[in-house]
View 1: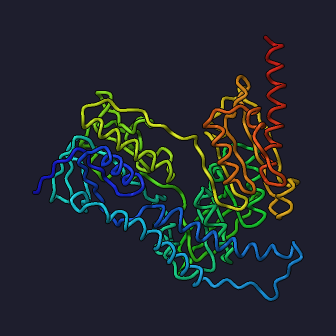
View 2: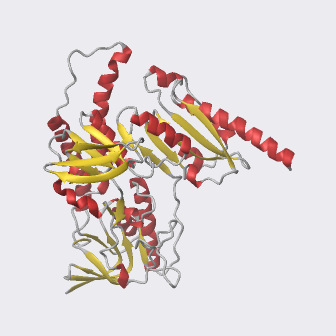
View 3: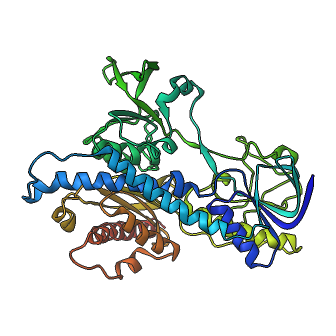
Length: 479
């Protein structure tokens, strides 16, 4: 068996792994980057980019359908050519993947190791039983994979995941999406707008990342007015029948009905790829699901001695599975892996204010930890509906509700949840304000142009400011 000695070994060449590698190399360390699969990040291959390509096509169809609302009539029926839609998606997807692959291939051959790595101990990795790598510190950046209940496997090739969708050469007639999370909502609505008969079904009432009961209720109403969305469907059975899938479920009155679909798209979650890398041979503490326990500000894992020489970043950490977070985590882990290798203490990295966006229409955005992270009685909520908001009505994008949360004691912004027009942009403004610890009064001093959708945010902030003043006055009297 060949032997390689390095300062830092990075397992996984995705977004987090590449960020860790670059950070460690910049710091002057000898680094090995190990990848057992194909080069190209989850985002480029089966995540952010191909999903947005599908959504872009769906938005083009929807815009044409909305044209009569402006007095513009398109003669004849709008025709969606599924083969052309998917051909463009795959072509552009491959282009994005190509950019990533070329970046990886610029890494010196001596640093790139192909093969599956397993821990022999905290500082030793075995790659395909052919190479032993001894590293002073290790970064786990192995990503995640789609998971679904074992019962789904009986559907055979009628069961697909998002990876499969992006390799389709044509659009099917019907798809049942199981799981109304971020991926399920985005792909389900896009397929529906492209002419596929879609039902998005779930259990427990969850809708994307939304926790605020008011925003969730509005989202269900807005999305289900366009397509079948049952966040808490009452399943009876799901079986393969020939080349289709029969889903039996009960409606609110207890009446059972059966519906057939060409495919079931499982969007029931993702699991960190940490179960096949030999973590049992290390000293790392793991949670109930087998994921390493770690410090999110340093990337360092925990063991009986307090801190280990192993770091974790990206989806493998199961912390915040988003590309920009993975890049930050990789950089932080890579820098600290070098510090440990040099016998120096780790440093806390800067974590950004949490921001999540769902590219449905209306869009969904969560800023901060959202409603569920707030302590009841310590905050008040400002609200705006976009149904009568000026610019939103002008462009026929006037569905939406925004709740912003303010701290009664300090007057600072705590976060927000929303569904509505331009949520991806409003979310950024709110996240920047949150990261800068701005008060609501300071936010209201910022410029708001006219007429823009951001004026709706100002309305919500004014509402929140009035409620904060009232709550603070009440607290002063009570004292």
